[in-house]
Length: 295
View 1 (cartoon, rainbow, N blue to C red):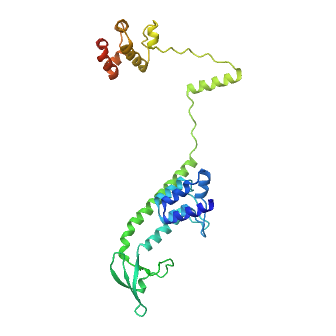
View 2 (cartoon, one colour):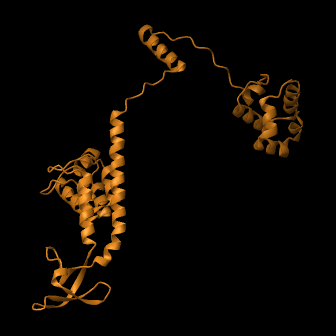
View 3 (tube, rainbow, N blue to C red):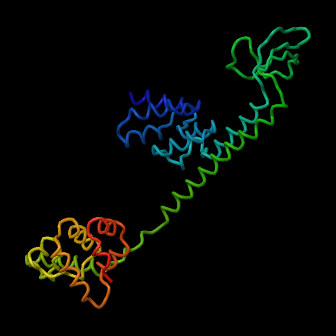
């Protein structure tokens, strides 16, 4: 099963079949096995799937194989790097861009002329010197005709290979930087140092260190029990207290809060909420406008 997937991945990378390659690698659940598959060489030249993706000039296939764990610094048994294979594929694409596959209508052995039908429907005659006879895998009844006029289409192919080259160089530079970068020493804050010392003390002596008692949080229930209003409270706690005062409080509770806050010389968090917070002001406007008169 693994060998079949390796063969399929190589074929997909060579023919730029991105979706098929993605479906094959999705069958493998283990990341380690998937990494082995994308780094396994195949064929006479010992190319990996990354070599084949470079030769075809497929940028998305290149990125996908690298994300699956392919090694960017891989070298073939003949010593060819990814950039060299990319250049070979670019040269082959440049050569192929000057030839067009045409259908043979007639051929005169004496005159050595081919009468062919071009893909756009035009009928032309070409001598045998303009026919590519070196191609082995050509469909019967078709030939490749040398048409230098199509060389302008090579601009887009060249741009595609250029993006692949830039991506490979950037990835190699990033990996090299990660290898040479030393791990920075983590700064130890005072609070972290205290925790470390406490853990060490508890482990060696088995005693809990005395910690400062935490301040009790002021709530609506404590106010009903008779506890005086706490001014030194966080904004969220003060907002919850005011909303519960508006919704559940009676007139005597509201007057008690107003008298206490009116005696304060400085503006507290309750004053700020009644002036700035829209939720508190909206509830007070509907149910208790007296609170909005607090100065």
